[in-house]
Length: 222
Image (cartoon, rainbow, N blue to C red; front, side, top):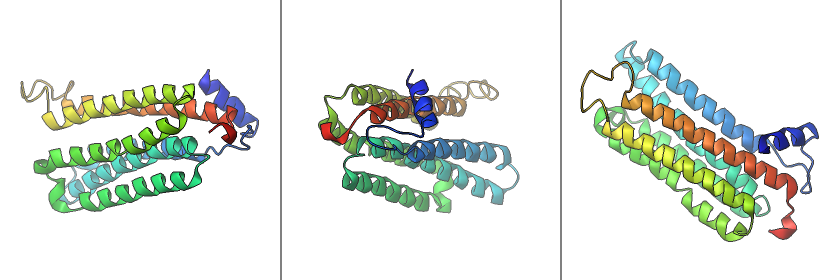
């Protein structure tokens, strides 16, 4: 139902009581997610070509993950703080800066090795959980808005999917228990990717709820 409302609103030119609610933040997330999965696909396909390309493509993979995290922040922050432009600018600028610092850190050759696998997972989780600050702020501003509470449920599901994925990524379960048995199917990295896609879908649902809310709301009630 929410998805139909979004499409119907776009067919009307995005008109709403707030005026034309921009769709570009929603598209930023979609494009960022698709580019992340594209980078991951290229990395897994071509990293075995040579040592030089191995380093390049795994760094590209990490940059893609960072891009997905940063782009995930854009639609919820933009729509929730649509009536608070200064806070909107502050939060989007902050996560973008954090993402750039993460990319620069991960470009270091030494951090691409297996030894720093827990560090990379911790860095990505830290970026993701930095969203607790704007989330708490959003709840304080909109605690009486049902759409925001539904969005929160989606975002909690997203966080659980991502955290579980990071857990499999670091622990290398189940292949560490039975080496060789999960080389084709059931490998921790495969489970990690499935959970990442599930988290992205949960976040996609959250953005649709926020779009539906903004198509109906006014800043007078914020």
